Image (tube, rainbow, N blue to C red; front, side, top):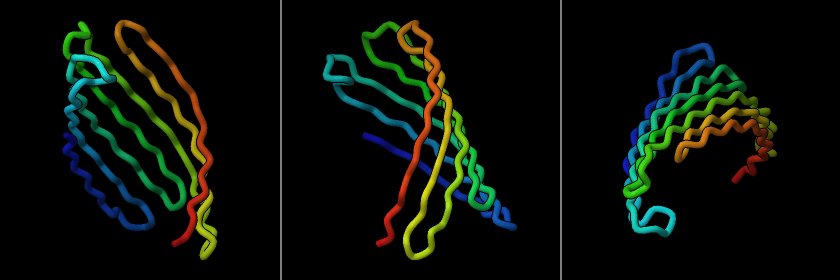
Length: 116
């Protein structure tokens, strides 16, 4: 079961902010006996074709003995191809503290949105 709320505020001059809050309850998390609960808060700031986003999540799985913390941030650019869709590029960073282990991840994403 998942519940989420999102809201976008148009700030004018091609600027906008989008916020999201989400809670998820997963039965038999990862195919195991313990159920999992996730809570996430995030926001994206749009400036024309640019955007910057950040989010934070807490994950608690029954019988795991730990509460996990996940944070991520990224920046990206979307190039509008008009009737041919859009081309995007994004780079991001993720920090995780899961089961007592800490991890750092850097990644990139290239997208092509097809027009329908």
